[in-house]
Image (spheres, rainbow, N blue to C red):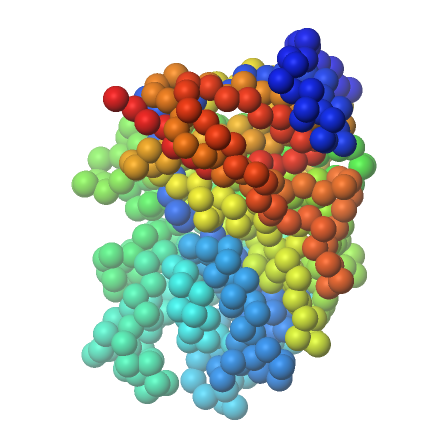
Amino acid sequence: MTRLKKTYAIPALLIGYMLATPFALSQEARIKIDTDRTIGEVSPLIYGNFLEHLGRAVYGGVYEPDSPRADKDGFRTDVIEAAKELNVSILRYPGGNFVSNYHWKDGVGPVKDRPARMELAWSRLEDNSFGTNEFMQFVRKIGAEPYFSVNMGSGTFEEAQQWVEYTNVADGPYYAELRKKHGFKKPWNIKYWSLGNEMDGFWQIGHLNAEDYVKKAIETAKVMRLTDPSIKLIAAGSSNFRVGSDPMGWNRVVLDEMRNVIDYIAVHMYVGNPNDDYYNFVSTPNLMDQRTQQLRGLIDIAMSKATERGDRDPIYIAWDEWNVWYRARGGAKAVGIHALEEQYDLEDALVVAGFLNTFIRNADIVKIANMAQLVNVIAPIFTNDKGEMFRQTIFYPLKQYAKNAHGTALDVFVDSGTFDTEDFSAGLAESNTRQTDVPYLDVTATHEVDGTVIINVINRHKDNAIGTDIISQSGKFQGPFEVFEVNGPDIKTTNGFDGEPVKSVQKPNISVNGDRFRYAFPAHSFTQLIGRIETD
């Protein structure tokens, strides 16, 4: 059910806007920006992605030597350009569930000598023609930071140590020299490594309980860090929120036992709209915020007992898998060559923007985030074997944030109408959740040292525009504000090879000189305002 928290008379200055917009204007809101009320620095690594050996993510996605769009190394140039457009900051590899039965040595050396293996996580043949060095070539082409996950399922700590040696040691030991023999003289110097994937999940090959996981992870971390002391290590936090599970119990054990070892703890979240309830769906980023706060508390407790970290940073959160995923989640749609090929609509894009707002609101502790995934598989980029590509609806909010939302996250005051949700599970196998007083306007802001301010506004109202007073409480807004909007004719509007009706559209600039201005945010829209605040 929905309700209005407040209603107002409509000022005469908005009549012109109302005549020009197809949406009714039923209420007003206030946004207050104060550059002295800061949260933390926004890490560029929250704008990351993920590439797993799954469906057409690798083969037919980033790597397709027979494609008319392939470069000399077999990589699709259209995908490279789209990834650059997304400003992908960090790319996670090679899984995901795939990694828990992946042995990296199968994917290096002459391609003709690489063995084909049964891929047990997603039910397809893995020919290993794409591996460590091919991934690193792709990462360099798009300008991203690499992030590797080691096999904590069927793998050993010795295998993980040898992978670090192969990628990060210049010369001398066997695996460093093997990399050079394979044609890569300089080490790749991979900084970020996760200690397995979703090891709390019963679906994971080599699934462990928390106590056994930390024993194996601590020994694996030991030999990896002895090989390269500069690496950053990410522990596998809980991703199992099913009924009867104890996700925070898992996280408590991992943080308590590994508080002096790890740099990040990784958590995952996918949401959906299987019951076609718009307001339930667009409120799901609030669940991510709740889980972030719970994990923040556990980290605080663990850090209060950490005695051997030296001058290292505290433990941060890595939301290293997140997205909308429910249409292709089970059965035949989850396995084989065309696994997990979701087609996204406008409401999915609004939820994606909501997740990005959550990262910014928690900028002091969320320092890595990876949308899963980059191409074809629950992805913002979609290709076919004809050399065609289109950008899904979810591409565009991610692009706007990654390009512009940097600097210091601000603690924004928002006063808008609210709604309540019904019980829902968001497409997750967990107990139902009901939320109250969810604001229609979901707002974050960032501020840069040169005075640039970026205001990100999601109007979750399905039918009505919301006229809003935007107020600066420290300094004055100056000069033109650029306006970028992601919207479409309907919440179910999708993009495809024949066109992209949902995309970023630049609207006319707003001329501002003072401590406030007004803007009406259209129904079911994401809007990004970019301007300046001049302070004394």
